[in-house]
Amino acid sequence: MTTTDPATPEARVPPPARPPVPPPPRWAVRAAHVAAWSTVPSGVWRVALVLGVPVGVMEREEFLAGFPDDSPLLALGYVLLLGAVAEAASYLTLGLVRPWGEVVPRWIPLLGGRPVDTGLAVIAASLGALAVTFLWWVLFFGGLLAAESPDPGVSAGEVLFVAAYAPLLLWGPLLAAVTWSYHRRTHSVRAVPEPRR
Image (tube, rainbow, N blue to C red):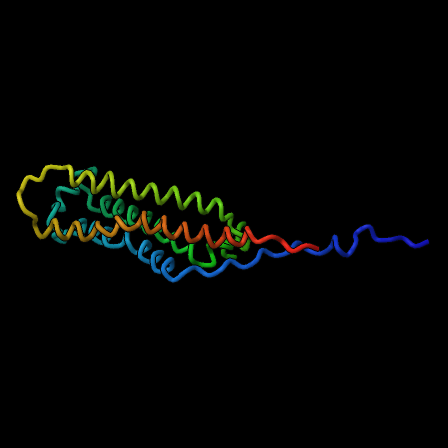
């Protein structure tokens, strides 16, 4: 009497690997890099302010007055933390044009090597693009334009301030454009029908 293995050879074949995602277009790679760097000038401006470098719009003492005991150490910690959070958030834009936006890097505990849920990545990036666009276009620069200026004309300090913070206006729209490109690339892979067996 012969017994047959209940697991047929077809059942032991692993599921087909996900087809490779096409490379991002050159414009999306450039846009992702500009978005990632857009937070650096304002971070440098804030650090310069805390360190006492004259930035023209606000004096160091005026800024420090907002912290307990006018603590420069606390202010510097706040500014560095704010810059680190902004930089980390803007750096995530690069994931939309890099392999780690498709497969979690192996060095990350518990998740390393797993495919990224591209739908979730698109939702998170889209919400991020909306949030930073609203923050910088409406709340920050909209507030600046609506505020009354005590002095007529524009000072050199105001020009420096605007030059440091203006790149933040690019962050949201560029993140939205790169997210759209990422969605199109990853969605085109999911839309390819699986071969018939």
